[in-house]
Every structure is written in structure tokens, then in C-alpha cells.
Image 1: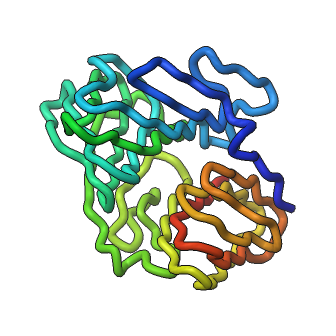
Image 2: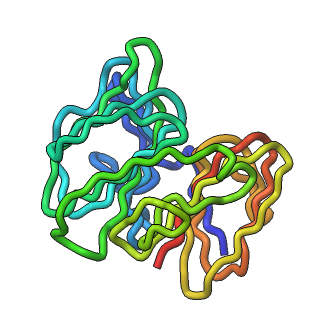
Amino acid sequence: MLAKRHNEDRGPTNAGWLKSKHSFSFGHYYDPEFMGFGPLRVINEDRVIPAAGFGTHGHDNMEIISYVLSGELAHNDSMGNGSVIRPGDIQLMSAGTGVTHSEFNNSKTEEVHFLQIWIMPNKRNVKPSYQQKTFAADDMQNKFRVVISPDGAEDSLTVNQDARMLAGRFDKNATTILPTTSGRRYWLQMARGVADVNGMRAEAGDGFAVTDVDDIEVRALTAAEILIFDLP
């Protein structure tokens, strides 16, 4: 079964410097039917104007992922990390017992467009940690590659949850099939482009709750970028 969460049904935020679409309830946007999907709690599609961003603020007991689609995102945190996240990079911060951080557009001229994703951990009050890795474009071209997992499989970042995140970039007309595991649930998020997912049209910003299917079959109708979350 595929249940579609249409792009235009997501909750909006427009703060002038920030424009967001929320797949699940977040901040002022509340919908009791969309509080998350298993441990996947947040998928925010954020666009931040040049030289603006999120000032220092705190988190605890959350696995926080930043996935940049275009532009550059500057990160600083109370663990002493300072970095710039670009397309091809994935950042994972395990907030654990508590951490503060800030995120700003690193450019004075170009917008930064990124997904911020939160996964609820299965281990609470761990020591906070930070990971960032650049994944080669060839490693996820016309296929799904594991980029986050609980055990570091395929040289992925490690998350405190029985969850995997896979990323793929597809040329027009490219097709791939991802076998599923019985008893697991999956969330597919269209980051860019248009595709056919198990016979359903999927456009940028659309999400799909996937349960009780043997395979997820994707055919790109345009160049496309897609994330899949494999969840308990």
C-alpha cells in the first residue's frame, strides 16, 4: 500500500527569510493525522535567503539530519564543530543529553535549499555527537545508496535508531527496484524531479507512506533525487 502525502498539503511557514514546507506537524503547524511516521518525526523542506539562518538554539534526544539540495549551509555547535554542508554532503547530529547549534546560509548572494530531518532515537541521553560525510555522486547515481544506518553499513553515518536512510539521483527514464523487508515500513520523499513510484506519479515535495509491498519500483520521468527511509 502507498499513501501519498501531496506536496501542496504540507504545512507552510513563511518568515520572510525562511520558507518551509512541513511533511509532519512542526512548530505552529499541527495536524494530528501527520505527527510523523514511526520514528521519522520531521521532514522540513527549507529555503533560507542569503546570509540568514537559525540562531543558536538547543535540542536533546533527537537524531537531526541536514541534506542540502542547493547552496551552502554553515553549521556551528556547542561540541566545537564548525562546517559547511554542500550538495553531496550529509550531516547527522545526535543531540543526546543536549546540544546547541546554529545553521546559516553560507552565501551572501544565493539561497540555500535543504531538507531537515528528525528521527527519534531508540537510545536516550547518549553523549552528543556529530558526523558529516561527502558521498560521491557515482555512488548514488541511478540507484539507492545507504547513507545512514544503525551499524554504519556501506560506510554510512550511524544513527541511534533501527532505521536506514537511502538516497538516489536518477537520470530521466532510469528505473530501479528496491526490495522491502516484511514487517518494515518505508517513507519515500521526492526531493527533486518527477517519477513513477509503483504506478503512482510522484513530484518534488511529495511523500509516500509505504507498507505491505514486496518492492518499491521507481522510474524517473525527469532527472530526480529521492530519499527512502527504512523504518521499524
